[in-house]
Structures are given as C-alpha cells and as structure tokens.
Length: 296
Ligand code: SAM
Image (cartoon, rainbow, N blue to C red; front, side, top):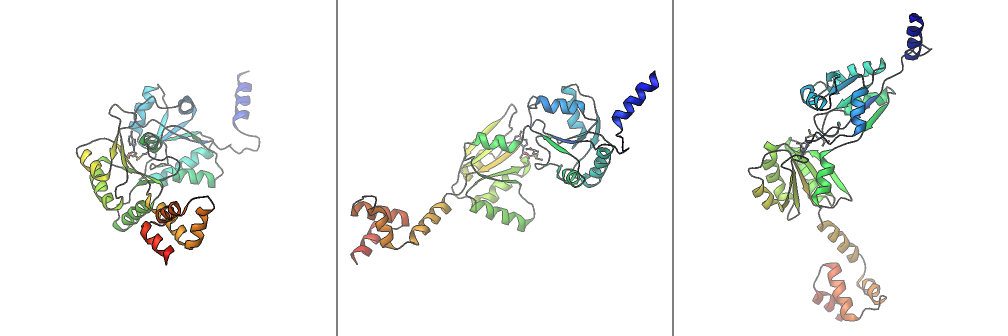
C-alpha cells in the first residue's frame, strides 16, 4: 500500500537514531571564459545537488542555462560570506548537498569559499573539491617561465605599507611570481613593479580561454608600453630573480679559503691557468685579482 512505500522512503532518508545525516559541500570549479571548460563530474554535481551557492547568481545562471540545469540558487559573495556561510552550514546539517561556485575558475582562489570550507571542517561536514579551471595555472603553463616552483600572490594589497612589502618579496623571489590584477589597475601595478623587477622576463596572460587570448612577453618597460591600451582580464607573471642564486653561490665559494678552492679544481685535473679562470668566475672577481693573490 501507498503508506508503506512512504514509510520505507522515510526510513531511508531519516536515520534510525533520528539524526539527519550531514550533506556534502562540493567546491566546484567553473570555466574562466570558455563555457566548455568544465568537467563532466562538475556538471553532474551541479545537476545532482540540492542547492547551488553562487558568487553572482545571474552570472552562474548563464552557465546553468547553457547546460540546461535548473536549480535552487543562493547568493554567497565576499560581502555576505560570514552570514551566508552560517545559512549554508544549517542547510548542510539538514542533509542538503550544496555546490559552491564562483564567477570564474576555482572558488577560494581569490574568490569567496574559504570561510564556509573552514566552517564545514570544524563541523565535521564533508568537503569535496571538484577540479577544473583556475586562471593562474593556465597562465603559468602558457607563460614559458619556470613552472617548477612559483609564488602565487593573488591581488597585490592596496594598503601602501602592505603593498611595499609584497613588492619587496617579489624583488627577492627566486621563484616565478604570479599576480592577479583588475584591468583598470594594470598600468599602476606594472609601474609600481618597475623598480623591483630589474630586467626580469615578464609575461602578461590575457583573456585566457577566450577569443582574444594572448601571452605578451618582454621586460617591464616593454610590457608597460605594449599593454597601455589593452583591455580584458590579465595575469602578470614575473621570472624569478637569478642574481640571488649567483650571489649565494659566490658567497659559498668566498667562504672557502683560496687554497681549498684551488684544490677543488686541481683534483679535477685542471691546469693552473684553467683553475685561476674558474676561481675568478666562481667568486665574481677578475682573473688578475686571483692571479696576484697566488703570486703574493
Ligand atoms: N577564482 C579564479 C581562479 O580560479 O583563477 C580567480 C578569480 S579573481 C576574482 C579574478 C582574476 O583572475 C582576474 O582579475 C584575472 O587576474 C584572473 N583571471 C580570471 N579569468 C581570467 C582569464 N580568462 N584570463 C586572464 N586572467 C583571468
């Protein structure tokens, strides 16, 4: 009979101890421009959750309409993150599954997300990231600058003192540096960077995955010139500083005595002339200086 089916259904939904099982928070990456840059798993997740929490519901609607997904949307953005995260936690505690999306790319990466994720962890609510696009990864791999180690700084702070600190950090960084910037602030930021990046290679990754996608390369002066009238979304990548490595290496050699340094190459079978040349290069001094020290 009908009531038996209803009862059976209720038993599967409400656990025996009467406590509702927590839902899951899915952190879903969405495209950074091209609507097709989304995984099957992300689409299935958006289709199957009870609620989608979106940074800008109108923006997310475009994506949902494209994939013919109709779902209850809640707004979750920077200015209501604290309050809304409580609302989401309550829904999750009532057994609702929620997908969190931002306007573009991966939530939590320079986008809202962190607060509700931290709260979920505190409340023992499962968080499942659904991977996909993030603008900085694509900027980095397309830049041609070293990818083995990098420093992602997001947006530079606007506060003068904090900004100066970050610029100093960029100056000293031997890692590739990645910065996000809003189009209307690009020129100011590039000009601020000028005295901190010497002649290092700079790449502007512009409009990734969109029609006008391009990578603009050069030193800081060239980049300032080339980007003066450019519009669109940009990421600034800066080659890591080489000099420190050389300076550090030179210091290591300078910490050795000249005799130890000489022996190092003597053991490798080099002759006197070759050894003096190598020592001078290692220590960043002239051959003559080394030669004179050996004569004296
Ligand atoms: N959550 C996003 C992610 O995973 O990359 C980042 C969002 S953040 C608010 C927006 C910034 O990301 C932009 O100012 C720009 O620096 C960068 N960005 C986003 N989409 C981009 C694109 N298609 N091309 C270049 N930069 C992009």
